Image 1 (cartoon, one colour):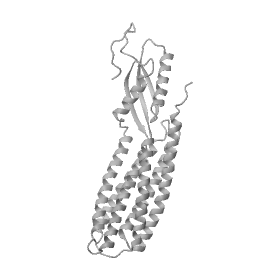
Image 2 (tube, helix red, strand yellow; image 1 turned 45 degrees about the vertical axis):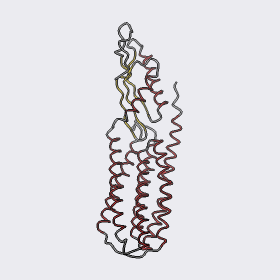
Image 3 (cartoon, one colour; image 1 turned 90 degrees about the vertical axis):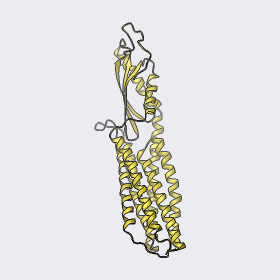
Image 4 (tube, one colour; image 1 turned 180 degrees about the horizontal axis):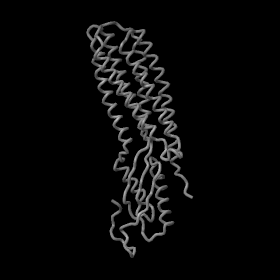
Amino acid sequence: MIAEPGNVLVLNKEESLGRLLSLISISVGVALAIAKILVGIHAHSASVLSDGLEASGDVLSSTMVYAGLLLASKPPDAEHPYGHGRYETLAGLAVGAILLLAGAAILWHSGTSAERGHTLPSYALYPLFASILLKIALAFSKFRVGRHIASISLEADAWHDLTDLLSTSIALIAVLLTLIDPLRFAPADRVGSLIIGILILFLSVRVVRQTIDQLVDTMPEPEKVADIRHSALGVKGTLGIEKCYARRTGLKYHVDLHLEVDPQMTVQKSHDIATEVRFRIKRDLPWVADVLVHVEPSPLVTERGAWRGASYGK
C-alpha cells in the first residue's frame, strides 16, 4: 500500500495559516473602520469618513475570504468527489465584485460631492497613519501566504489591502493639504478620489478575470504541465504521455493523464505503474490534489517490443 504524500500535511498547515491571517485581517479591519468613521464624523472630514466606509468593505471581503478558505479545506465526500475548492474561487470572485462596487461608489461620490474649504483637527491624521502601517504588514503577509498555498482569494484580498493603502494615502495627503491651506487645496480630496476609484475598478477587473479563468477550467501555465509530464515520465515502465489535462478547483489542481505503457504488459502491472505515477505526481507537486490515470498501449513499441521512436508524448 502506498502512503499519501507527506507534503499534504505541510500544505494543510499553510492553509490553516491562511485562515488565521484572514481572521486577523477581519479584526484589524473592524478596528480601523470604527476608528476612521468615528474620527471622520467628529472631525467633519469627508475623506477620512469615506476611507472608513471603504474599510467596512474590507471587513466584508476578508470575511468572505475566510469563509471560502474554511469551506475549501473540507475533504471530498460522496456528493463532492473533487472536493470543495470552488468555494475559495467564489470567494475571490466576491472580493472582485466588492472592489468593483467600491470603485464605482468612490467615482460617484467624487463626481457629485461639492468642493468646500474648511479646517480639520490634526487628530484626523491618527487613524490614517495607523491604517497605513497595518495594511502594509497585512498585504505583505497575505501575498506571501497566498502564493505559498496558491489561494486566489487571499491574493485578491492582498490586492484589496494595497488599494486601501493607496486610498488611505490619498486621504492622508488630502487631510495634510487641508491642514496647510483649506481654501487653496479644496479640490485635492476630489481629484484623489477619482484616481483611487479608477485604480480600484482596474484591479477589480483583474481579480474577476482571474477567477473566471478558473471557473471555466482554463489550463495551467505550460511550466506546470511540463512539471506534471516530467514527474510521470520518471516512473519506471512509463513510455509516454498521450494527453495531459489539468483544471484548478480552489487551491489545487486535478489532473487527467493518458499514460502510455507496453501493450504486452499485464493489466495488473499497468495498474501498478498507473498507481505509482499518481502518487509520484502528488508527492512531487503539492499543488496537485489528485490524478486520474488512463492507461493506453504505447505506439512506440512494435509487436516485437522494439522502440519505434524516441519521443515521449505529444
